[in-house]
Length: 73
Image 1 (cartoon, rainbow, N blue to C red):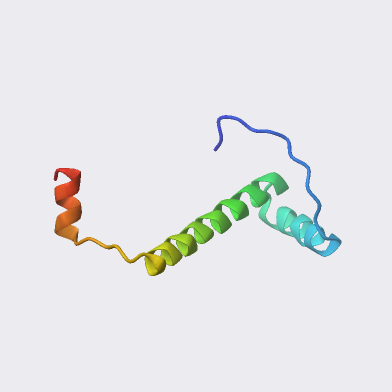
Image 2 (cartoon, rainbow, N blue to C red):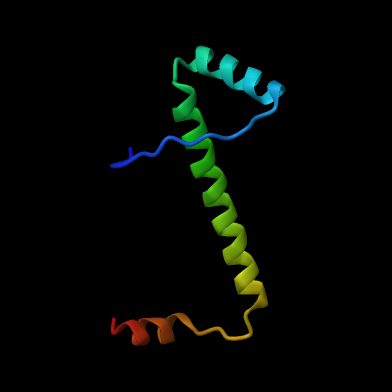
């Protein structure tokens, strides 16, 4: 999945850690894999939310044809 990794320490609530342990056993996946997948999904979601906000806040828009022209297509 990743070419490089770095050990990281963070704190979780006991309830969340217990849920993670259960999920890990149920899925047969390492906790690291579950946390990585969850963070990737969360960050993708947040990226979409930021893009929507930027689009909403933007007063400048261009048409599809203008975009293609700008890209030289």
